[in-house]
Length: 205
Ligand SMILES: *[C@@H]1O[C@H](CO)[C@@H](O)[C@H](O)[C@H]1NC(C)=O
Image (cartoon, rainbow, N blue to C red):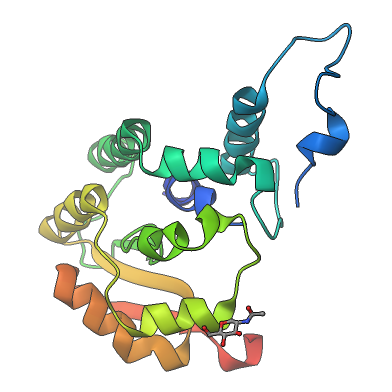
C-alpha cells in the first residue's frame, strides 16, 4: 500500500513542489550538445518534471525559472487529468486485488492533503506555478481561507475506501494552527468521514 500511495502522492504533488539544473548554464542558447540528442526547452522541462515525480530530483526550492510556464500549462492540461486519473485507477486496482484488506475495521489508508485531496493550484497559479521561492506566510494565509477546491479524481478513491470500511488517515505538513481551517475546507468540499488528521508537530516546525 505504501508504495502505491507514494506513487500517487508523487504524481499528484510533485509539480508544485519546488534548484535544479539551470537550463541556461547547461545549454546556452544555440549551444546544444554536439554529439548528444538535440532537444528543446520543452523536452528539458518535461524531463525535469518526470524526474521530480520519480524522486530522482529532490529538495529543490523553486521550479527552474525556464520551466515555470511549462509546469503551469501541464497543471492545467488534459494530460495532468489523465495522469491523475490513471494514478487513481491503479490505486483502485491495487485495492481490489493485491492489497489484502483484512476487513476487520483496522484497515487504513493514508492520504496527504495538499494536492492529494485539496488542490493548491489556485494559489500557485498566482505565484508563477512554483517558479518563485515559496512564501510560507502567504501560502498559509491562502490555506486559512479554506477555499481550496477538491481534486475530483481523488474524491472517487476516497469514497470507494469509505464504502469498503477502510479507515482514512490524513497526514499533512500543514501546521497545527491551520487545523480548523483545514477541517472546514475538507468537509466543505466533500471529504468527511475520515478518522484522523495528523498535522506537523510544533517541535518539527
Ligand atoms: C510573504 O507574504 C506576506 C503575506 O502576504 C507578505 O507580507 C511578505 O511581504 C511576503 N514576503 C516576501 C519575502 O515576499
